[in-house]
Image 1 (spheres, rainbow, N blue to C red):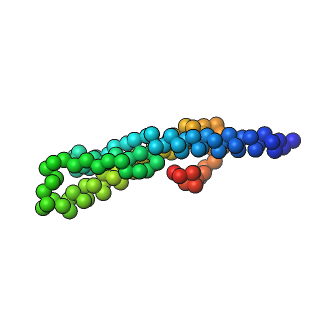
Image 2: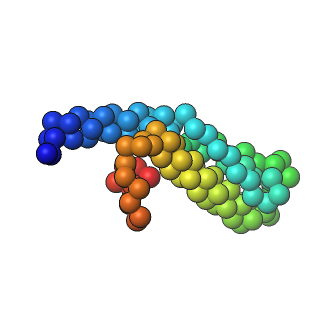
Image 3: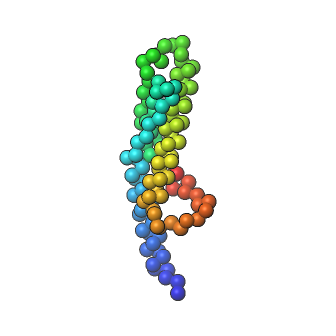
Length: 111
């Protein structure tokens, strides 16, 4: 027999776990480098750029274009890693609650 009340409780429990996991993402920080460490970007698990650091040797106006390229590379790496860590956190927080469905898209949950 189908237990509608039990299913609704499971859905509410899953929603609470997903919200908790999403709230925890802002506490995850990742850093990535470009140009052999000349530019470093730090991002949070909720994909917010937190900090960009430059090696002082890049503070030459003649290297402006290279600096821009390195910033883009470092930020993209940090954002990619933040996204991966976020997916891991969501998976960990909801383990056993979501069925293992191939192709399940969690993008509607901020991932």
